[in-house]
Length: 262
Image (cartoon, rainbow, N blue to C red; front, side):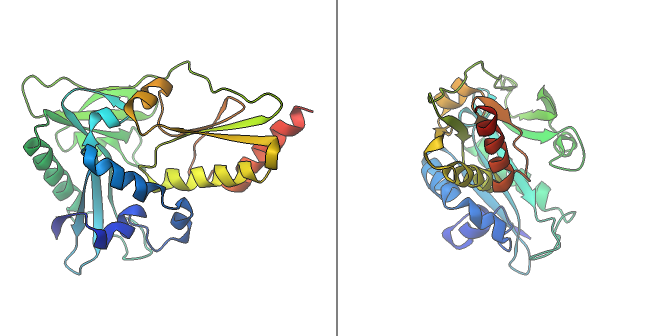
């Protein structure tokens, strides 16, 4: 197995979060690719784990912490680190060392770029992006927000631990006489892009009765103003951003709000 930098050749696999066999991922459109091309100039880096058979078995993407949901100085932040764990496509490639190779390569690159440390996020349960994987690889817990754990590893003696950006009291502006669907949207993850497209289509299906307000949180100032990178609100009320939040479920929520306003 070797670690390589992302090139145009493997861009579709990266955009699909390694699930290039999954038609659902294509529903996310071109948002992530557009974001990737724009963020490369701001320090975004992607490395891939290529197995001996040529298959892309894993990926890691990281960037200066200023463009993440964490507050910090002189750090890089791992947005996503994933090794193919599905039976479909190339099949499961986990537990072969790809994760450690990717993490090591990202850390060396961040050090070479002058980073004082690396931050990463994970969950406090074992089934999905477990933070315990990072702590087992030399990271320490720096902060916690619900189930989301912020971990970090200093490279320099004067490095300071990061903190989660705290939720703000900012509320979306509503359009009088209409129902407003507000989408905070940063397309760093294709799953978020898919959810956004579900929300867009759901809102547009109601015609002029519903207004879709999209807020680009890929810029640091906007992200800190709102305190979240990806979120959905219907008339100002948050909707749980779950993987199974599809177009029909969002339509049902919008319909219920419209009927309740009569």
